[in-house]
Length: 501
Ligand code: FAD
Image: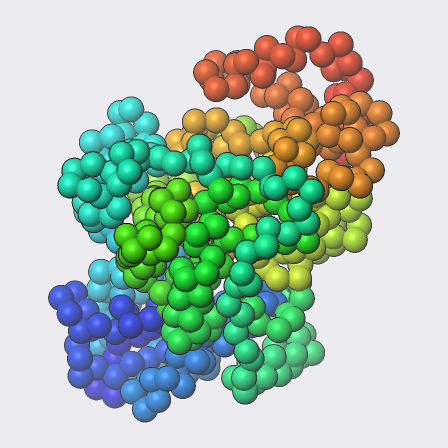
């Protein structure tokens, strides 16, 4: 190979080898490096390791003779083995660590990032113009809709409203155990998966790496063909019901109408443009209602783009933000995804979903897992690492803003206007998870005091002086004065400590 174009393990779709402006030389050989040290450094969910390796090996099989696939201890060793000092191009990696690494290599030329709608330059000029009033998703999302002509009718939003969140926050249908949405696409495993499972078993046996979680049959796409089938199935069958119950939680129906496309997008198997374009086409042809399509477009063209750009815009120091001064270590039952150790029904159900699949939807991530950690003052950097390792769609860029900013308020409000946490009443309203629980959402002290309800008040008390100055939290903070049992509640929460609730 005289010249090579290197594909990282999350650059697996056609966008990363397209020889258009800013793309690689069409005559360059392709290079992929499977680095063992990536898995040695951290204790990943085994289903995640499986998915990434399976997806890389599927891509290598598709590319055939065009690719040199190297198994090495590290990227450095892989490069040395495959290309020596010959020139290499690579599209901008998705983590700061990998970007620093490739930028420091003399023979590597870094091409612009791919796999997102908005360019770095466009985001920077939007952010510079808006920073004074605080960066907010809603303004950015409208900017993207206008610039990319998404769900627009001339200069107006389709249907006359930018935001249909109001229609998309329904509780689960009363008494329903399941939403009844058509089943999502699930892939069928093949020889590549068998080989991956065999390798993971061997690495574990050799004591080389250690994983957490269960590696059941692979649930998420590992190839472009599978990812397109998953997108098609979602748009044709599940998108119509996506909106209304987007925030609901049902113990027996963890997926509801969610798309399950995050891992395919983050592996680069799908491009966000094709996802939002197909969703919009479904609305224009009358196959999906506007609230569902707007909700989905908001997630991908809004949230996903916003999070990607904030990762780079906020800079490296963002990683260590800790505005609330939270330093408590994560307990071992949490680290081990030990759902059976947990009595609180909601947390046990969600932790089990993570243990068994490496996935749960955005409200359990935010309002069950993140909220629990926030209330107990857990170290935000350790929690970010936990989310990164435990979720099949977790990557550095997507974890930092979502966990440090969105979920833990560790950035002091650069990303959100208030900390996202609640008592058990919210969980009860949005789910069936409180039914049959030994704790009661309306109890804050005593044996059956809900850990979320008590945790909420104890969190507000701990950060009273900060939160009383925030217009969105000053009301609840003043509610503290009306709690005659507050001293008892605080004692109780101290005694509960980090034991599994
Ligand atoms: P859907 O609900 O169907 O949404 C469609 C798509 O929108 C997703 O596939 C995803 O690509 C995108 N999206 C929506 N919200 C976000 C967001 N906040 N950030 C980035 N993309 C978004 N998403 C990840 O892709 N990887 C993560 O590691 C991740 N960690 C999270 C941690 C926390 C604490 C929170 C609150 C959210 C996190 N999210 C993450 C965002 C969101 O929870 C997942 O994208 C979503 O649950 C994936 O399931 P889905 O594909 O069915 O999503």
